[in-house]
Image 1: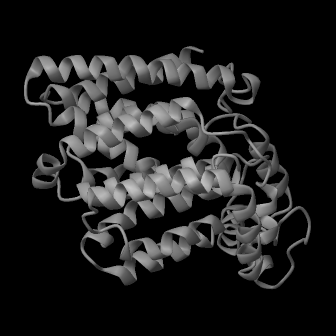
Image 2: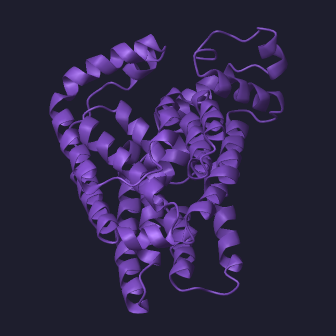
Image 3: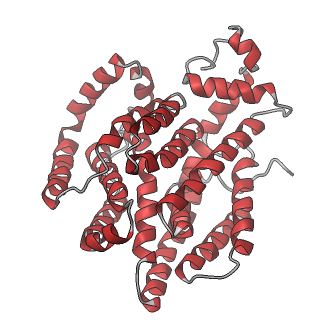
Length: 363
């Protein structure tokens, strides 16, 4: 448990430097990022059933020169995983000196850390608050379990700048690469034409009401989605995630309503001070729409993971833009208590405590 406690303590201290500006904070930030990277890159078989799946997959991956000659083994998804991820794994295998999937996990962690976290600097001046919230919201799920999709999520996070700049071709190319890692990234391709705008209150209310109606009709609409997915070649993949998981989590609903209220109440202020506000607010609305509409189906939990960054950025705006020190400090402490409780709850609940104790490959 100690490695996890140290991680969240360091994240809290780093986020505090966004609340109260601190000189020479690199002395704190650098050890945090190195330690966070080590936690992800050097974990030993932590990540639930997905880790086992990738471990089995990687035992059958062939070096890239063999793959290009068609000498791969058509066993356990060495071909039916998305092409980009298979080629990526084959390149890693070509240089692998380990006995196990450890180099693959290391390289995926390195790619994500070099893309996802630096991307935040473009979107918010309060990066560490955003990352602190991420520790509760999705850190373990994204970094320990969603191996293929985590790369697609990182590419999407980087590509959001191109929506703001209206460089749509760059956005589409980057996310097409993401599709080659995880097919669910298809949902991202049309977003560049939709989210860089200011939605009216009426439109937002219609979206929420529509989401509630869809949630009632979701079984019928799921069949239609499966027909469309089959037509574009991902029907089998969606079937793997089609099991029901019940209704919307009450905690998710409370978060949605709270963020929606604050974002709308201070909307004009954030629009004036944060050029990316409307993009992230609209991404948050898309995430909320998916959660409310399709919470009964596990597959949509995978779709909404792309939009976790919208929660992170909006929360950082909410805390960082409070003017009075007392208000900022109070809000940060309340948020911190919420984050810490959610963080430790996830550690105990995920995979029935499968993340405990933390295990390194180093010793």
